[in-house]
Length: 150
Image (tube, rainbow, N blue to C red; front, side, top):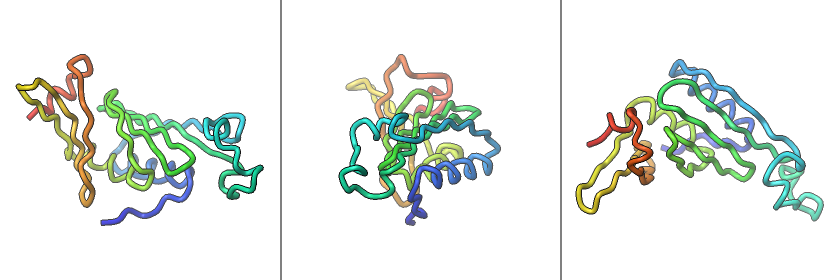
């Protein structure tokens, strides 16, 4: 099932806040707006060279979501996002961030552990998309993550 498009950082912030509210969580947002405040302004000054109007005022945001597990969402200018779940960072397309969070909060997440070679992988299943997978070191294995081991 395709996700509704989130054409701007602000629309993604609203979508994440709405999803968090559905799950009874509070969101604290901090915004970096303008070329002097964002990473995109440092490397992609395309607006002065005839770039798109959307690049003229870059907007990035960091969202900290209350509750367990600890979740932060970093939204970048160019449809990029990094969702960090209990210190495990996932690269997620901006349009998929609300569905990714919904999957975490509804239990579509688990840790796969292998005995040989020894490894742990945090897997988040978003319906209609390939699963998101990231390696977990034993130092990162929090009580929340340990409870998800299969």
